[in-house]
Image (cartoon, rainbow, N blue to C red; front, side):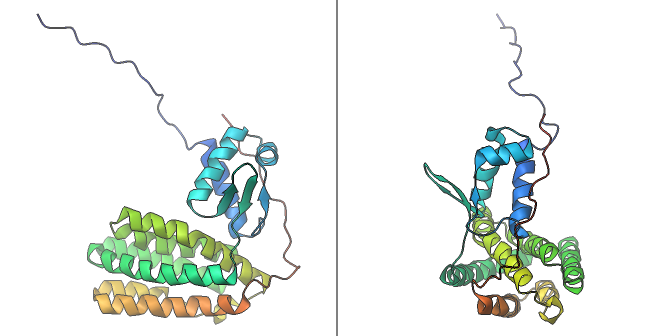
Length: 245
C-alpha cells in the first residue's frame, strides 16, 4: 500500500530584507573607513544597541561579521576594539597581500570576459572620480570594491575570503591616514586602469607587473606616514538609528 505523502512543515519564513545586524555592520564599517571610529576605539555592545535603537543581539551579529573582515578585534571577557595596525603590522599585511593578490589576479585573468572587464573598468572610473574630488572615504570604498571584484573572479573562495579579511583594515587605515594628513590624492598615481589593461591582454607576467606597480604607487606615501595621526582628526557623530523589525 502506498503511503500518503506527509505534508512538509515550513521551518522558515521567506527572507524579505537584509537583517538588522547586516545594516548595523555596514554602518560601523563605514564609520571605521571614514575614521569616525578610529583604530583602538572600544565598541561597547550596550552603547551601540542604544545608539542604533536595536537589540544587543543585532549588534553582536554585526560585530561578529566585522571580525570576519578583520576590522574589529574581540577580546574574550573584555570588549571589542577597532583593529589597530602598527607600522610593522601594516608592512607584514602588505607583503602577504601582494603575494596573494598577484595569484588572485593571475587566476582571474582567463575568467575575465568582456562584461567582467567592462565592470572592472567602471569601478576604475569611480576611483578616478574620487581621486579628482579628493574624497578619502569614497576612495577607500570604491578602491576596495575594485580589488574585491578581482578576488572574486579568481574562482578560489578561500583566497578571496582571505584577501577580504587581510585587506579591509589596510583600506580603512589608508583612508584615515590620508584624511589625517590632508594628502592631495591628485598627486597619487592611479594605476587601476593599468591593471584592467593587463587583464585584458591576458598575459600572466603583464598582470603580475601591473599589480606590483600598483602596490608601489599606492602605499609608498602611506608607509611614510606611519601611525602619525594628527589630533585634528576628530571622532564625529557616529550612528543613525537602524530600524528594527
